[in-house]
Length: 145
Image (tube, rainbow, N blue to C red; front, side):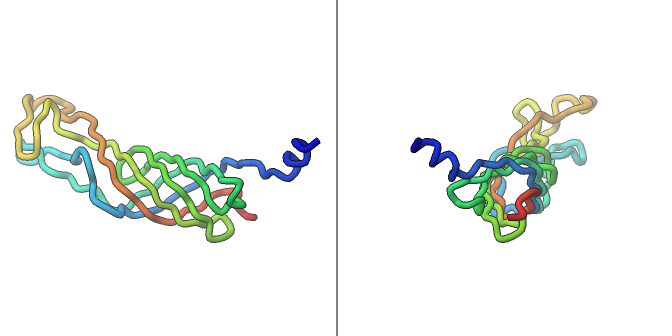
């Protein structure tokens, strides 16, 4: 009887699609995005803008004003992101979190300024991971209440 009363008043958790546009709120930690110029590895800086798309998991106890976000990073490099969104009205919100970006890193333990081992190698890079904090705006579909 008591469980039925609580069940009828409990709000269901929702999962909605969200898009995020943000800026890096700090520097990049971890691997440095690189390219090859004049036969040596050089820094290829990433833009400060970040775009993501993913899922927003509402927190029922906040009356859907707060959501946890898991998203795929689209730009400036592919990756994944996680954070929280505070709703400010009709699906719009402010989102902050951390993103892990998959970048080109020098192969075989080389660094910036080093010559690659094999200049004819079609892929002289390995996947590196750079981490950054972000803050920005989001729109969550289905959050019109």
